[in-house]
Length: 429
Image (cartoon, rainbow, N blue to C red; front, side):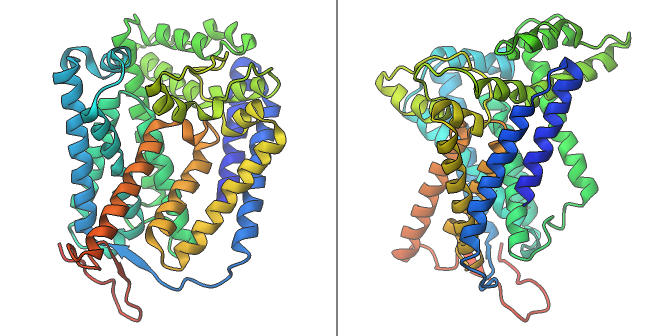
């Protein structure tokens, strides 16, 4: 139900933004997003109704396990940075984050070192989820995990030069909070109050705005207003009704700092809400035979073997998952897809309350995050998210094998919360 409320709220706010700013009211987009969320909720409800058992086992992870995963992620970041700077010769220091991103996109694919770095740097999302779930169960070493997670996320954002790494982190954290609620815990961990949560959201929005400022500088925009107008024209190309109004969107109050804040803030809103008009248009557009919903895996895997994607008028834009599925396959297939996704969320929720870790807590968080991200883009079109799933799967397999052969103790990854104790158990550092 929380995901349905979020989807409906997001869709309505996006419609109001485009309606008020551009006089474009994306009613079809709202109906489609709300409808797909209702279908997912129905799939979730059908599966969870088959298991009404209360929480049987509460697990928590050890801080040492999460610190090791963080170190693996940081090692991946270092490998990725070394490959791009020393092997491909990309000068991050002079080009900056945005300029370096453009350069390594032009440079093409890297070798094995790049593959290792891209894969394991995304493992940082595993300790992020555990941080939300287990904060109250850990001792003071939890601050080490927190610091390493923040360092990993900022490093991933810097080296990839994009904003999706942060967007995925927000979705994963929100999904973990939903998981806490499903386990009967307080949704917000003790280090987060509603006020701190609101501040965190504004901080993330500020970081997004700073990324836009860096991109404006890297691409030679003379001011925030100029960059905003250029960005608006680019994002509005699928919808001419929006494009004709881009020249009036920039703010000019006469106070330079205020104008910069307002214009880069508006850029963040455009980035978040351009899906309203793209999603509204694409559901009625003819399809030339392309699959927009699976561009990510096609580009990551098939592209390495020379597979050419069929171009569409919507390449380079965020397409809501429901709208993309309608464009690719039709309404019935979209409904089946969201019913399946909701059913998987219900299945992993049932496994989570039964005390499963990777196929419970982690799988539920990934699935719920996918549903949250679906309001903007198909989750499988986010390479970092796909890499995170692959990295977490590899870590789960390695941990299972290490325990199986006695290389590490059986309780070195997860432990069961003792019941009837007055305080949470302490975790050795």
